[in-house]
Image (cartoon, rainbow, N blue to C red; front, side, top):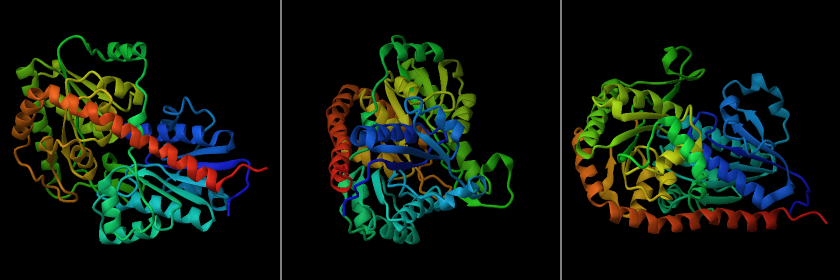
Length: 426
């Protein structure tokens, strides 16, 4: 039965508050959609976040949004959450909601929250999520959760295929990540970003490298651990046997490739850490480079989404480990290579038909890379990418409007669903 309610409580739950450029870009486009579709029917808009202070940096255009901290100690900090009436509409807004290779913790947290809202009799929307190769137990959790949801939108065909494989029978709509619709900042804003970072878009070619730490996983419960490995107490990042050596080899090989780009193409290097956790390996690559005078560090700890997308827009080419670097560079048709450890970049590269520029680098939780000669592979692929620049730019440029149109289906589907389930009171 439709609910004749005037003002609604709406919440977004994702991997937010950790200076993750991609998650925040997706959150912001989701909030815009909620406001566009529901308008003044939204009585209370809540963003669930790991770190409220970090979150505030991104919500300057949404001052009405209420920030609610979540985490292991939330019941102590906010015991009233047990008696909270819940939310009329609960959005699973994180793209990686149904991915478990970094930890089962997040998947269980997202699915547990969705189950709680359903038990309260409320509506839950899976909003443009992905789905990875899940452990058997997590397959069962996802099947149970997804089959109980009210609206399911997935951001690529690969995710839908895996959901079906895991036994999800609920209707699933294949759309695209909302960040494809993230607007490019005005040229005046972008120029200030370039000036602050010391980047000259009209000078030497700029090659972007967006690294991450492949080997500092999984996140595990531990009563004690090294301070530098602390995630959120009592959870710690973990180094498996051999993983530190693999990490150091990745840094050295990435630095060698970056130096090669400087020497071969007379290129400047933008080392972009898309998330707080990416900064340590990114800084180590910078420190290891011979030509660090030609490199600039661009950190998500100091730059918001508008800053990062501005930098991505002026690249000659991009070597990325991060899915949202792919998405946010799409509007500028930046040729790219992916060094990957999961299904996210792979899905986009398959749709672009550029799998020859995709490196299946490591499979979690194995601490040993599948590729031993990463630097040589990157050099070979970079030659390929640069020689095919016009073709790749055309291919990405042709596909971008299709991704945007699919992303906009999130709006269309939500509009129709909302009108059916929440008609305005007479």
